[in-house]
Amino acid sequence: MGENNLFANKKEFLATSSFLLFIFLIRIFFLYQEYQEFLSKPFYYTTATVLEQYAKEKNSKSYQVLKLKIEDGKSIYTTSYIKKNLILFKVRVKIIIDNKLSFQDYLSSFYSRVIIKDIYTKKSDKQEFLLDYILSQHTDKRVQSFYSAIFLATRLDIDLRQEISKLGISHLVALSGFHLGILWAIVFGILNILYSPLQQKYFPYRYSFIDLGFLTVIILGLYLWFVEYPPSLVRSFAMVFLGWIFIVLGVRLVSFSFLSIIILILLIIEPFFLFSISFWFSILGVFYIYLILQWFSSSNRPIYSLLYISFGLFVLMLPIVHIYFGITSYWQLTSPILSIIFILFYPLALLAHILDFGWVFDDILILIFSSTKIVTQNILAQDLAFPYLVSSIFAIWSRLLFIITILMATLYSIYLFRGLF
Image 1 (cartoon, rainbow, N blue to C red):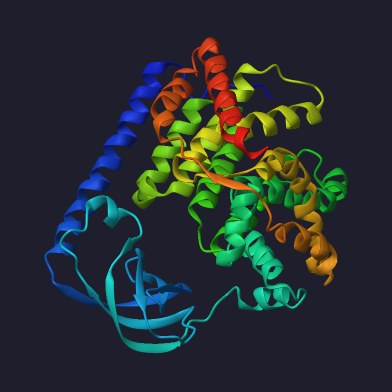
Image 2: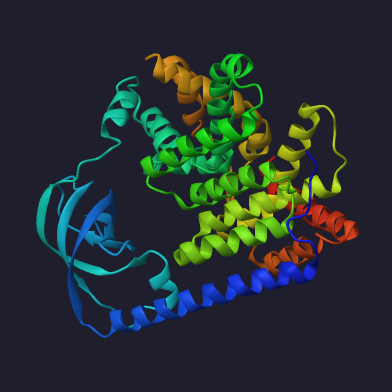
């Protein structure tokens, strides 16, 4: 099956993207009206579900940080002195409106003073059975937190999250397109084993990629619903779904126009993604993969492609990640290798948990998580951000700028890790 461009020419692309951008701006306009109405009240009552809860301490006083999902879908953070575990409980709250709240904060998760008026019964959690099943196979809390995060998108234990950051493997823990790609291969492969004998015997005229792709998309969609729509996974699912359709139609996928249209569609569906760091990290990860595939020679050996994509993506994403997260350790240099190993580890760990011996890798994970003597430093790349992003964007059309972008990222990597050895 041949590959055609998504758009016949630049005019079609500009017309389509302009139309989608116009719809997005209309969505933003109505959200701004909603924001103005929100600020017009001194407070209001609503019902919320407690998604996260963890303890913090300030001036020798302990308190709880709560993440609430209110009825209209927005997430807010607040503090409370209630020590009871409220995760997944429904609560009746009085939200105190801060007139200084910006529109940007309104579109993202923001902090607000909240008075909890009533605590209702615990919300039925569709993940509870599987979560208990996973946790029962481990005794170490860090390992329990790790597996529940990579399988069910739960929040990492706060101490483990810091260790994961030092190790440079946060992208392996937060559910994203990386995990969805592995799950696609697993689900499609299993379905193909069951489908092929039937196809050969009863309906050889069918195109298996259409039938199995449709079933795989449905199964992955159910998984997305089950883990409650993490932003990076929503983006990934949209790309998988539209990617499958475009492959069936013979449209080329490794295309920046395809990525641009996906971004606009997702922002129209969920404008709150506009200020989601995880969403944009996920988008930029795909962007740099496309950039690598565009300018690097393709190889007939998948292992070569896997290697240069893994190492190239690691180097190119370093300046991006360090715009917001400055923590750096020499362990992060192993990230490309660990990413490749994770491709095998993830399905094996999944199978082990299904067969009730998920503990098989516990000793290795505990050893990794116990690397408390990791030397770290805190360096941000905010001054580099603008020129680097501009160079990256124009590298779409220029091999020279692509080389300059790689050179900038490489020099920054040397600067970043020089003080750790």
